[in-house]
Length: 78
Image 1 (cartoon, rainbow, N blue to C red):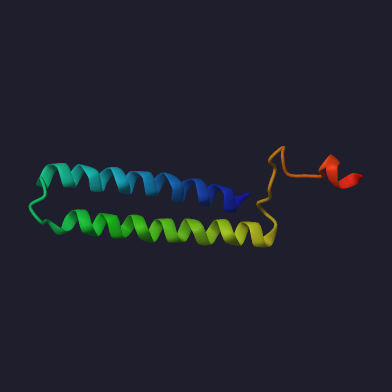
Image 2 (image 1 turned 30 degrees about the horizontal axis):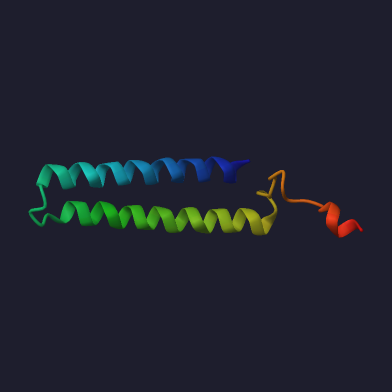
């Protein structure tokens, strides 16, 4: 359960970091400020953490595939 909470938190933090980077980009109007680059680096780091937590969740079995099209195929039963 905790892994799902962490994944949702990282996803929301990733969206907030992306919005903050966009805001500073519009505020600086492309004058070469490092704030946008730093916020995008935070976003990349959060995305990497998100990917690692999702991979760990699938590996450990806490997260699974629940799509309706994943399962037994009637064509394979014949």
